[in-house]
Length: 147
Image (cartoon, rainbow, N blue to C red):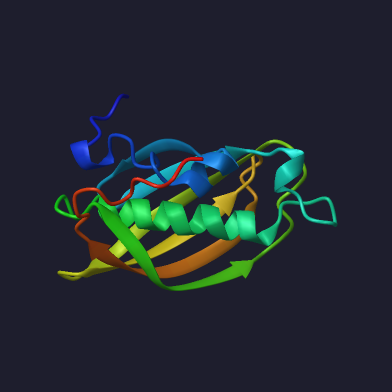
């Protein structure tokens, strides 16, 4: 089934240089839900040889913000106000991680979300809750220096 992606989410990760450099891939987003994935590479691992916690938290942050933005067509960004994460088990060394975000409550300016990261065997790696503030992007912003 192919979903129509709203204009404001047509390239939702474009311009987020950090996320692009990590290799995060957009999967889908609609109706308070979002999904991204990451094919693990050696650069994503910590000194123990498993996925670095910062990589996992970055996946959770971006997917929850993405889920929240699906509920606000006027918003062009969601900045993190608060985020709590529980790490359940190591994220592995190879394969693909999938992050799923769900927005469960929206106000005029904020959205409250949950997220989780799972491995290819559907094992829960981490779970998170986050609060995001909607922002209307001004002309000329989000054009990061790409040296």
